[in-house]
Length: 109
Length: 115
Image (cartoon, rainbow over all chains, first blue to last red; front, side, top):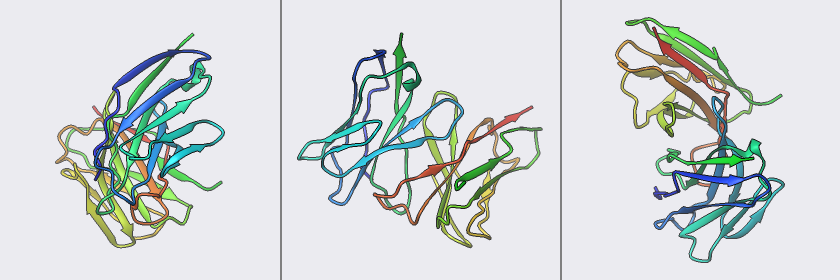
């Protein structure tokens, strides 16, 4: 199971673009990279998933370099409501899906 | 609406009591999971099940038990053997076994407090 490393916390301001990078040096060939968002006292929810290059949806973009050893979640023009914990998941082994500690993003007015 | 329903949202347990947290899904997913989250911490896997009548221990299964008698239901019992059960419990499901590309769907969680 690919180990992931994310910053513990980040601060930004409303209207800014926020980039959160996740390192996963031992990612396997068939591993996807998935990001989840969690608000306090709620279950995490899916944001975006990718395998290589760039993926974009209505809420975020995911950038994956050619070596796939890292990925960057990009949140455009954040607002106060984007304050949450963001988890990067890579792969699954023996049917387990393991979450890391995530990145606490705090958006300031 | 399709989704995962956890109940109760808040539960209080006395020392020495067993309590059961309910988790029901109508997504027709084969795989279901239970996670524990302590304040300010990440999610830790308690148990998971890939198919009816089968389940596997996760990383912190001691003091917990589960059953999977129906595809849509995966209740978690917190037994008196769990010495520090106060936490936020999350149930989740995915379409099938935990392969890399599967999306996981979570319930809204249940808060358990020991009094």
